[in-house]
Length: 371
Image (cartoon, rainbow, N blue to C red; front, side, top):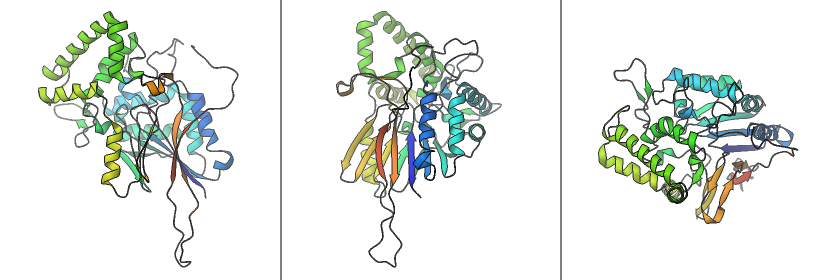
C-alpha cells in the first residue's frame, strides 16, 4: 500500500473570521478553511483513497493563547477554559473541522498533533478529547516531538527561552483551586499583551525578521512605536521585575536573556544541524514555528525543512521580500520496499523522501478580499 505523510503547522485558528453579529474578527489569523478542505479532499480521494496517509499537525494549529474568555484575554488558563476555547474554535471553523472529520474517516488516513507554544493547552487530556470528538476519530498527540523512520518533527518553541514550555512542570497547582498553565514569559506576552497591539496594528506578529520591522516602525510609525515601547517596558517591569499579575522566578539576568532572544530570532539552521550531527539515526529534521519556509542541507544525506505557515507573512529578507501567502507543507513519500540481495531476506524499506510543496488549490472564480 502506498504511504505518505503531510506536515503542516502554524495555522493559528481563532474563534472564526466573523463574530456572531457578522462583524469581522481582526484577531483571526486563519482564513483558508475552504482551501484546507480542498487540500484534505485531494489527499483522501483518487490515488490517495487506497493509500496510507497521515496528517501531522506540527504545532500552533489552534491559537489558544488569544482565545479570550468573555472578552477578557488572560493568562489564567485552566483545563476547563481551554476546553471552552477549543469548542469555540471548532464552532468558528466548521468547514475546517468537517474536512478533518472526512479525512480521518477515510480508511488508512490518520491525524497526529504535536503541541506548540500557542496551543500549549493541548497538553491536557480534556482538550485533546474535545478535539478528537470534533473530528470523530482518535488523534495521536505528542508533547514535544514526533520521530519515525529517520525523520524528526518538532514545532520548535523548546529552542527559545522566552517561548519554551517547562515540560517538567507544565501546570501550576500550588495554592490554586484548580491547575493553570505554567506559561513561559513569551506565552504570557502573547496571551495578555499582544492582542492589544494587534487590535491597533493587526500585522505586527506577521512580519519577519522582527528587528528589521522595529527599525521601520521608528522611522515610519514613530508615535505609535514610542507609545508601544513604553507599554511594553511597563509590561516587562510588571511581570518580570515586580512580579505583578504573574509570577516569574527567573530574575534580572534571565530577563536580559529573554530580551536578547526576542530581539535576535534564533537560527533554526544551527539547531537543526546540531540534531543531525548528534543523532546518527536522524537524517531529516522538520521544524515549524518561524512561519518561514526553509530548506538547508547539512551534509550529504542530512536535511532540514521548515514547512512555513498558512498565515499571511510579510518577509523583510531581500531574497523573498514582500507580503506572501503560501499554503506550504512538507510531503513525505515512501517508495516501495526494495528487494534484498539475498532472496531469503525481507525487502528493505527505502528512506522516505521529503519535499516542500505549496497547495495551489482548485480553480475558483472569486475570493473574498474583505468580508
